[in-house]
Amino acid sequence: MNLLGKIFVFLILFFSVAFMTMAMMVYATHRNWREEIERTDANRPGWKQKSALLKTENDELQAKKEALDAQYKAEVIAKQRAVAALEQQLKLVSDNNVRLGKELAMKAAESGQLNETSAALAATNKSLVDTDAKLRESLVEEQKMSDTAFKSLVSMSDKYHELLAKFPALEERSKQLTANLAKATALLGMVGRTPEDPLDLLPPPVDGTITALSKRDDPNLVELSLGKDDGLRVNHRVDLHRGNKYLGYALVTDVNQDGKSAVAKMIDRKEPVRPGDNFTTRLQYKAGK
Image (tube, rainbow, N blue to C red):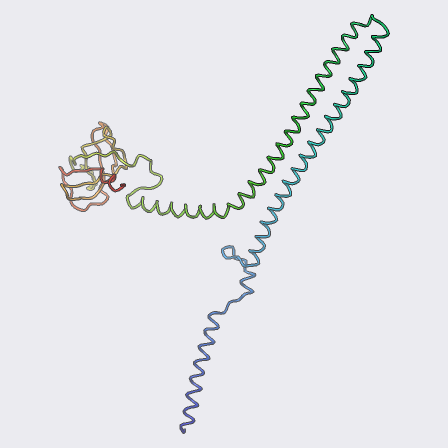
């Protein structure tokens, strides 16, 4: 094989590798767009399913709006009918009042013996006038109630749209609060606590002495010189030290009935503990500052 043949063989090999690499890159970056659109996975819905969900949500909102419009129209029609009925009743009362007045005048002219009847009719006339005034007041009140109901409906519609606008921000805030709760739970776990613990977990600022190692089976139990009378409760944390040397911390597991002593369990022991060592709760206040 001469030099030219070798050159062609090398070029064929080089371009074969290059085209194979390009084919692999094309295959690796290929995406089936039909699958992306028509996918029905609940965790990763496709674009077609997302569009259907958004359309369903839009239809529900439109149905709610139409229901509110229908309710408003029904209330307006009912109020209009009530006003029309009151106006009709008012007209009947006014006509009756006029008629009674005419009859009263005719009866008075015909005979003076009808004075008692005339007085009764006058009283009736006064009652009708009072009724007319009351009906007018009732009509005014009904109109005010109708206006108030319309304003209330408008206000409710505005609040509804305002809540729709605030919903994404509220959802994002909910996610932030959930993340903050997880962080707070993790921080409480680092000190042996949970969010369900009572709110009096922060003990009073006191100092005391380890009177003895507990005589129970657990070697991590120690007896404290302070108890319920000094404000200590179960799950309160006490830090143990010998002078300036930090020995670790323990949690109160039992408060004796005498109220003057308690038992705590070592959670984090840096050094061996012995009777005469001291404990304090003040480090928690300093850490809080």
